Length: 68
Image (cartoon, rainbow, N blue to C red; front, top):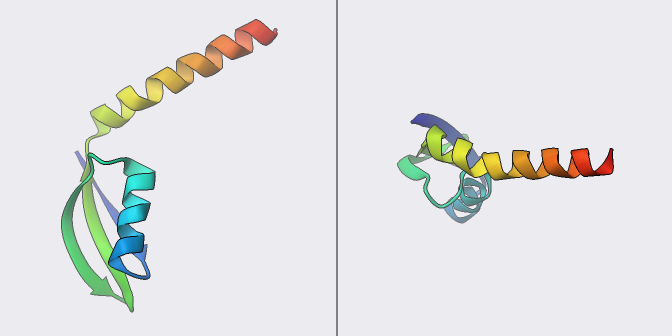
């Protein structure tokens, strides 16, 4: 697990960023106002992110070998 910080204008925008960057499995640990913005601290599971990224790597490698 790793902690990440997300800043946005409001909580809704911060959660949109979290979903976009880390997916729906990110867990919000903290939510507060910081410098007139909303700060979310989220916990992400690095093992799940690595598993999600692997199919993309394999697809890219396969398409590169076909085009050569």
